[in-house]
Image (cartoon, rainbow, N blue to C red; front, side, top):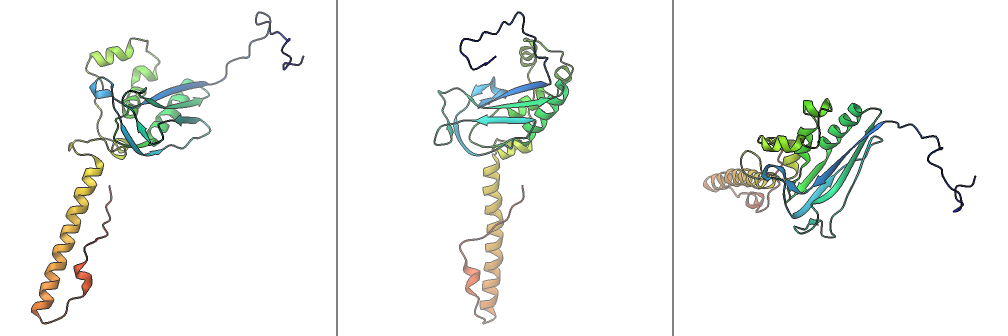
Length: 210
């Protein structure tokens, strides 16, 4: 039959059901602070890196300025991971969350969800609709600083964002360079030599490794 014909009818009571194949796990990416009761956050997103694979794909959306508005829905992304079974789909999602990089003024639930789906109860599928509520009631999951949280500019154990630490580090390195050049400059003058103008540079190239 021509399935494009609007008059054709599918009799679901007689039609053979297509057997299910594989498993899919979906994760909502939200601008929420999990350690503060999933409080919504707002602000700009300077960088978002995600690479789809044959087993994982996702989409992200925000306004034209690259910001998450405080009065809008906190969800701005969705990830989907598939696999021949639940465990493989879970492993694919774990890898996808670890490779997802978000840098900006917002907090996200990425690290929190990464911890959740690696808990024994989740791995063993020993969960129900009250599982997460029980975790929150018992004190929740403590999120330690990770490479992802640093890339997102989230405060670590020092209480300073990654961007702030970079500015401080660059300032210290530049100060040391200027101090060394000043010593060299005055030393040449004391010996009656003309110092090169490069010792008076006001702009410095600084390389930092985080």
